[in-house]
Length: 251
Ligand code: SAM
Image (tube, rainbow, N blue to C red; front, side):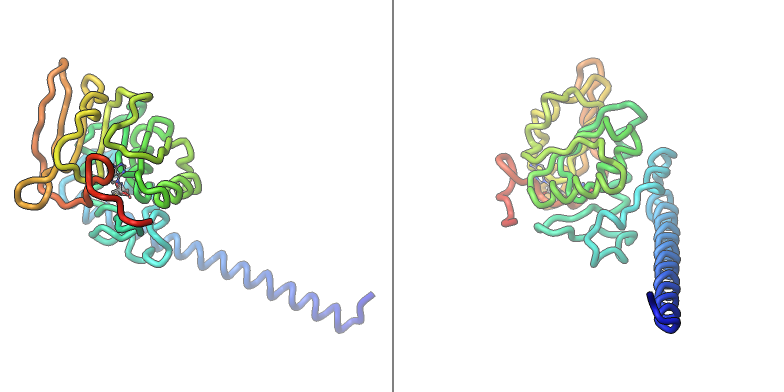
């Protein structure tokens, strides 16, 4: 049994607790809404505004909460027009670059796609919106990043994306051929195993080192068994690591 004043105190504390929870929930909703508006602005100015026209690409970028793929202390920069450090000397690419590479792949629902360089998992989530989560395969060479990306993809609802820890230079032959392959770290030349794993009618997008110290985004297609290589824009990516690339950074 409680005295009358103790009962009043308990009711008061309970009411204050519920009020606090309601305020917290309201402020979280307001914050999510503000980030959604930033995301829509990012699509309009940085992506559509620079000429990306594929409606499915634009919708994918409106859907995926990019702020959940960057480290907590960098969330307020998530919708900026630049790459962001994600640890282990790696970056989540600039939104426009992710959009351009995705559009160049010419994907649609049901196509199978391989990404080399999972990083934060953001590009994999965009690809999942394009083709369906179960059709996305992604390989990351740095263990810390591979684990974190898998967790983020699961928490954001892309749990069917197939993640693998390893050297992506060799591709993922067990699941080949792929309709689309995107490489998000720069090799010195086009990786031969990835060409072999490209399906008929498929497309490989890869930034390859050029003689000016940057890279050129190469768009490689296989049609009637014939390989065609075209150049898109010049760009700057982190180098491909591993056996056929640069030395691994310390984790
Ligand atoms: N796509 C990523 C995203 O959405 O966050 C950004 C990728 S970041 C620009 C390049 C990534 O490629 C890094 O995480 C790096 O560790 C990874 N990487 C580099 N060489 C690799 C290799 N041989 N195999 C697999 N991943 C590699």
